[in-house]
Image 1: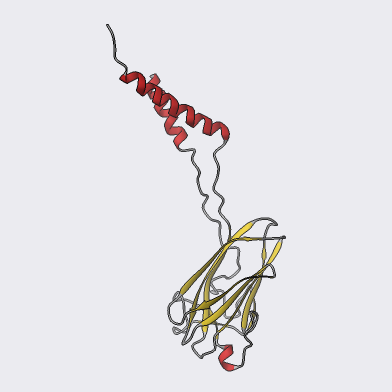
Image 2: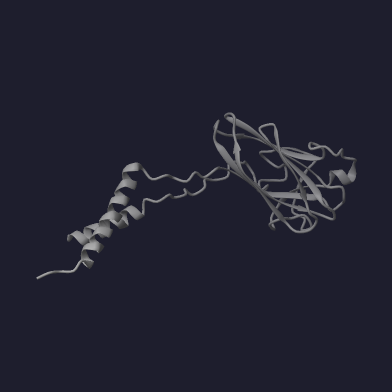
Length: 203
């Protein structure tokens, strides 16, 4: 192989050593889409039901739904209303990303997220269209982490949740020092070869 071809091959090999994001793993939540059955398997659920009613669906299949605060008074506190809770297997120190879809009926609803017993955020869900909520970098403190969602809606329109997904945060890979050095060396040699090719020749 000529010197120029060898340099080009080295540069191309080094170019593939850049930072790459791994494919996200599967959902850590059991029955995060509520398709298992009407008992909401996998969740410790309170004052909710699994429904296929078109008025409350999010993705055309089955969603978890409540209108409990229309039927009875709910206090204006983060943990009032209905709830779904799951103890998830986690790794201490690992960060996780969580997302879900929600849809409120005739009036705005409220959803409150707790992670590992700590309040993360209280959200208002506007009436009408489906909304998606995403949370990145939730850090686990142990081998089991409690994920809890409390939600309520004051009207008969109800509030639906679906497509709950929890995954380890994707960490971008960093190239090894030897590979990075090879890449820089290859690019330097390419530059040197170009400079030489442009130098005038004397006979």
